Length: 213
Image 1 (cartoon, rainbow, N blue to C red):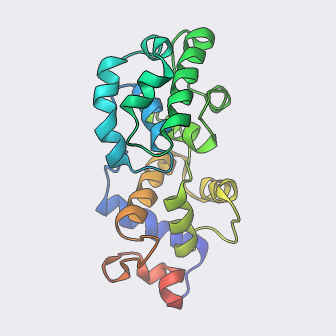
Image 2 (cartoon, rainbow, N blue to C red):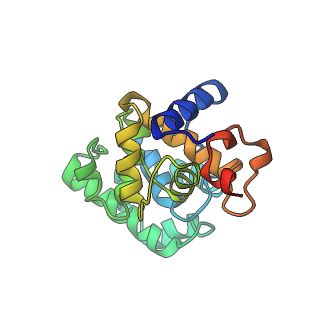
Image 3 (cartoon, rainbow, N blue to C red):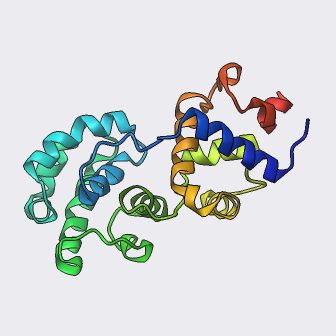
């Protein structure tokens, strides 16, 4: 049975509210600065790999000042197992220096200032807003982009920004942050890029991809 858009969102919200009411980030962190570092490291890299790297990194460089005073070579040696370690080490060093110089060593809690930090784009800024500061935001990564398009929560969205705008328009504001986790975890473990596990997906009854397959 074909569902209209509101029905789809209602179904998704009802399903995940029951199945994953406490969905949260799989990155391990203790404060906004640690989350910021982890998010920068997680670009095109798995959370699992990042979580293997960050404990030693945070122990050696626990504050923006400590990371700002480290050499890029020191940082690179500690993050060399993640993707793009050269650029990420540089970004971590430079963003730490900016945090100290421009923000008193405090991670800003607004998108405009977050996006001034090296290595922080709109998606990463939205992750900080949603996860660290519990503000309504919808970070769109490859999982969110794929899953929302497959289900039919977005229509003809050509890029992450268009996807974000449609999801923000239709999810209730107070659910935006957790809805991001619902979609990303669903994409990571069920609605995978290749060979999605439709047989064990509770959303197939409203899913455009499944209905067409």
